[in-house]
Each structure stands twice: as C-alpha cells, then as structure tokens.
Length: 299
Image (cartoon, rainbow, N blue to C red; front, side, top):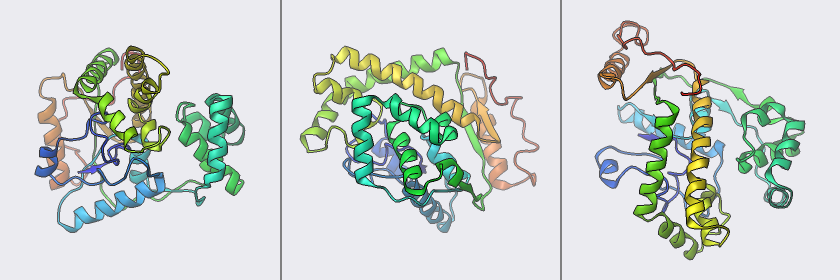
C-alpha cells in the first residue's frame, strides 16, 4: 500500500487522519505513513519523488503497488507524471504571503492568483492557502504561470483505477459520524499534545481538516461545539472538491458500496487486470453496468 494521503505523512497525527490501525499496517506493508515530523514542510514534488520510489520498491519485490487515498493532487501527479515547476521554496516570500492572507484575507490572495494564473485559480479553492501561495510563488520566481510550466510524462505502468461513490446525503452523514467518533477518541487531546510538544499552531501539518479547527478552539477563537460544526462543514466541502477532481481522472471504475455484489464485481475486475486475461483492461469483465456516477446534486 502506497499512501496518497497528505496527512498520513505526519507522526503523532492518528485520530484526526483516521490512519490505518497498526494491526492492518503490520499485516500489509504500508509506505509513506509517519515519515515526517509535524513541523516539517513538504511539497508535491517531494511526494511524487517518494511515491515513485515506493512504487519501484514494491515492484522490485515482485508485488503490485496499490496507491490509496486521499489527496487528489497527489494521485494525479503520480498517475499523470506531472513535471513539477522548477521553483524552489522561498521562505521569505511565503512568510510575506502568509501575513497578507492573515491581514487581507485568503480571498485577496486568490484574486491575485486569478489575475496571473486563471487556470490555477480555477482548480485551487481559496481555502487551500498553501497551494494558492505556492502558485503565486512559482509565478514570482519564474515569471510564468504554474499551469504553463506543468507538463505530463505518463509513467510506464498499466493502471487500474477503482473508486467508491455514495449519494451526497449519505456521504455527509458518514462524515458527520466520523467527526463525532474522532472527538470521542480524543482528537482534542491529540492536538493539545502536539502543541505542548512544540509544534507551532500554524505548522503545515496543523492546517489539516480537523486539526486547524481544534487549534482555533484551544486558542479560544470559538467553542468546541462550533469547532465540531466547522469540521463537518469544511469536510463536506472538501469531499465535494475531492469528487470533482477524481471525476477528471479518465477510466475510473466506480462502485456504490450499497449495491448488492459490488465487492465481488470489484474483485473480478482486479483479478482480470492482474492476470491480464483479456489483453485489454477489464474488456470482458461484467461490472454489472456500473459506470461513472451521474453528475447530479445527489452524487
């Protein structure tokens, strides 16, 4: 298993990320989990490098890697072979832009990005301040939009992409239940331990969903009840964004886990892919007629 979740990377962040249990990780080797300290910064280019290395390691052992997650940007960068813009981080510029985001508001930075790189602004929401800043940083360092610099070089792999989908109301219900479980399991205490261990409240890791809202609660910005509601609302919004990204991936085989026999159809498709019985991916596999979900409000 090669994780494509940007928050699984950080040690000490287990409850708010719903990392796989230690027992599951002991049964099947997992890569790119718990490799960073929460104070560490990380980039898309570093993830792509590390993911390619992990995939090569799995292949070298005669196994099939499973990229699981997570963070759509990570998945697409690996599967589509993005050529990451050659602009090293500029801590001084980043600090300046972060101050502007705090003083002027994140929408101000997003409007600036829309002027210099409309394509990047269209795919990066204002809430993702780190990515907005990165796109502005690339433009400032190179004089060219990040989307203009990004190229593609497809990796030399056969790929099977499997996705799960639910109606939006059911997805939101499950998200809300998960948030409540995380609070019961000790998310507040987990965040408090990180802060007491010296992790800055604005460290990249603590900008994650769930963590930034609890940080704000512990800093007295609002009540725990409001923090919980904000986590739910922001996670709903992220889930919508995540599905929009994943629908852009060509060739995804979607499955609804409420449908009878969905798991058996998924396994049949995976077996055909691994055995390459058909000569073309899943050409003769009966998937029960399930295709990409309709792009309606309930999906």
